[in-house]
Length: 176
Image (tube, rainbow, N blue to C red; front, side, top):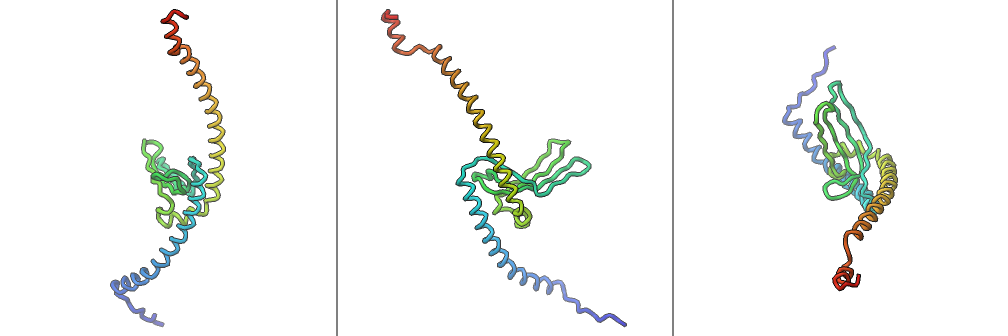
């Protein structure tokens, strides 16, 4: 039994039809992205209000080959540009050479496929961020003690080196 002939649609007509469908679909895509960006903005505002100043990353995907080329994609919280925010990072390079490339996007500026891929890992980012904040707090406290010791040493040395102004006057007047 012969196969029925399927009408051949010319390429220009196929592109024309696809473009019209893309135009309609792009409106839905933009609205969905705007809604997601509002949520990301709320998360960023909540984190920004904590004034952490600490970065944390969680790897989404990574790999390397037999020539020591590597790549990774991560989501995290970091200083991107001049603002702390939830961000996406792509990194690649080669372990054998001084070759490392890294691109960091504020999440609302990352390509949409990256956003879709990474958002499920936000709980891990928050957990890692908590660990980093706790560790940084412990280190800051230890360094504060060290800085106090150094400041006390400088203060003691300064008191031995500098004679107060009234002591100089008394020495000149023969009162010392």
